[in-house]
Amino acid sequence: MSEELLAVADELYGLPLGEFTAARDERARAHRGTDLATRIKGLRKPTTAAWVVDLLVRREPDQVDQLLNVGAALREAQQAMSSGELRNLTRQRRQVTAAVAQQARRHAGDEGLRVTRAVADQVEATLTAAMVDAECGRAVRSGLLVAPLATTGVEPVAEAEVAAAVALPEALGFTASSREAAPAPRPDLHVVPDPDAEEKKRSRARERLEDATAAHEEATAAHAEAEADVERLNARELQLQAEIDELRRTIAGLEDELEEVDDELADAQEVRDEASAALRTADAERDAAAAAVDRLG
Image (cartoon, rainbow, N blue to C red; front, side):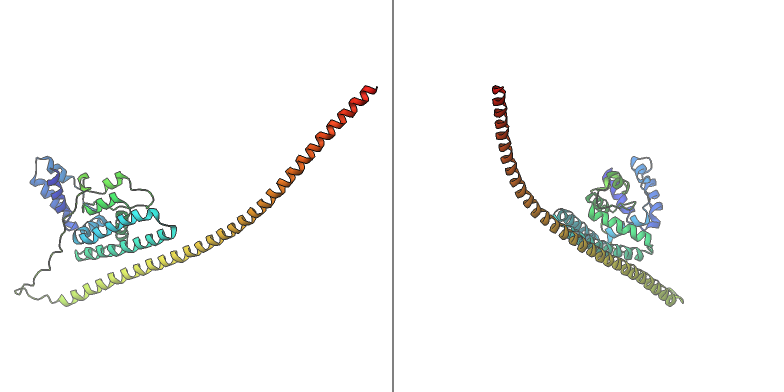
């Protein structure tokens, strides 16, 4: 049943978002009276962000595979990286996920869905989680996401969170089938031309320009934020390096002083030992003199 259920799920989660519920219920009715019908009926409708990622996985499987492979390589490489290299790695990861997320938004737009900023942030966070965490990568590659994913990049994402983000447990390890965009309908020569066609084209062009402008503004803001982070961290790095250099000079001075104190301590110990010997001799002479006095009465 698992293979059949996965095949049905793969088909359903590849449909336009607005068609999901009706198609799911139709598939469940077709298997009425079976355990498969119950499980199909239990498939959750994906959130908008999850659907956008599922769409990307089916439209750009090679791009997603490349993203996941880069993520795996970076996870392996970062174990031996310095702090400076890790900062560069984080910046590169952001650039990759931002670029792929933009592709996801474009495909969603081709399907008639305008992606809001909030949804775009969830899509990018999900792709980041897929690069950072191997299990999140498996969930994304399944194409059966029902909820977005997120990670701090410090701790692995909890198994329960990953499981809750996919349509069914069997999704982990499943690979979504690729799917081409539906071809544009061929014009019907017998259809009366739409008098508003040119205005509709202009309206679509204006919407596309608005979307592209908004995306450019977001990219510009993100770039400015990244540049500010780099400048701030560079300044902090220089400050810390200066503090470290000052501490090293202080340590060097203290080490020199320690050597001098060690030499003086050795001399003082030698003087003390000589004084101790003289004291013992004086004690013995005093005791002998006292004894002689006592004998003479």
